[in-house]
Length: 140
Image 1 (cartoon, rainbow, N blue to C red):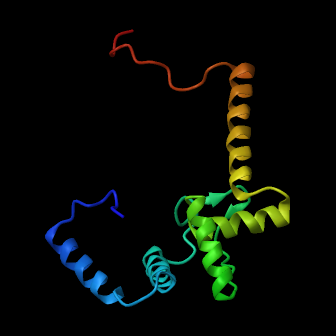
Image 2: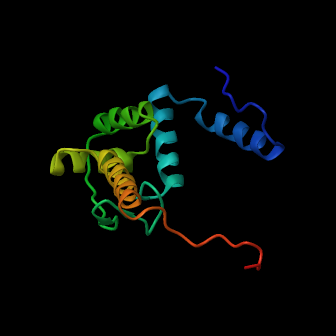
């Protein structure tokens, strides 16, 4: 199976050869387990959806939640995350918010953005456009 990234630099090619040699005797399940672990190590832990320090709909995302599951559940969960094209932290965050508030974190963010847009639109209707007066090049 060819990947879309087959144009490797010399350093990448050398690293790829070492990785392929290292996993040569392993079955596909073991290889998947290793690559998922490496991916988790490279992604870091609990990076918020936007960036560190950015507030969500209910405030700053700063409280970590952690748990342990069996290997099969972990593998299936990571496959589910991959199918959603999302990382494990975002999927767990959505699950916690859905259980707690009845809607996912992403839904709450969209509601907040929509609410802010409607509020701005309403203010424009009430007070008219606002901002700095346009400059006419220094002439009066």
